[in-house]
Length: 254
Image 1: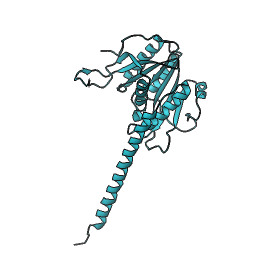
Image 2: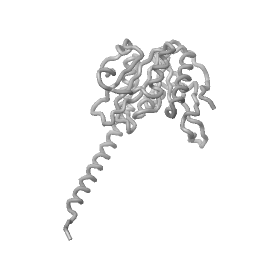
Image 3: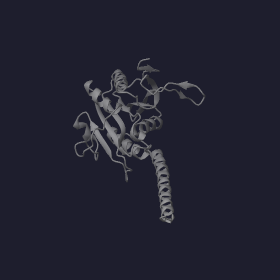
Image 4: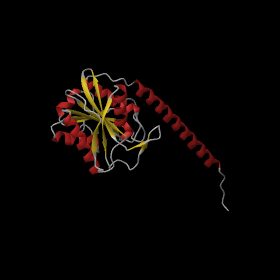
């Protein structure tokens, strides 16, 4: 088996924008693309399969199995054609990353895409207080003027952040003459982050000039925050209890 794209149909589009969101820190990209597909009632028109995905199959609700895949969806919003790439995750090797991204770009060129948005999370290793910030990277600095208030590498020491499909889409896309912007939401990185996803989609909303309802993400973010708060309190309670037990233990010298 080789990395390949199987078309279900070819949508008729005009000046489409490609939006990619696969697995990664906080599952931000994956959550964002899945939310867009559902919110915009996008139509699946092609699937990407690769031997570089994890070696397992997925079991559907009816008991049937299928290979892991990344899928292409099409939606028209406010007269704009959007191509959304979503899937079960990213591939597991550097070679596979290049193969997958090249296939995504082949589809982009087939549909005459001239602009890409890659969505993901920027792991900080800590819980973000308040609204997560969005880091913006682009193939040229002119694109960064489309939005306001985004952090830009160079203003802070971010380090190497564009790893995997998110970065390669911009780098390899640029060699094909396709402009790209990457939007990364601050996230702890250790758990699914709906709040960061919401920030990224709000940035995308501003740059594309479309409306994206993120109320569902807001609700789920609050649920996660309540759960994390409950776990934190339980952890602190146990630490106090263990400390009290240690202080009460008798000690003596024989």
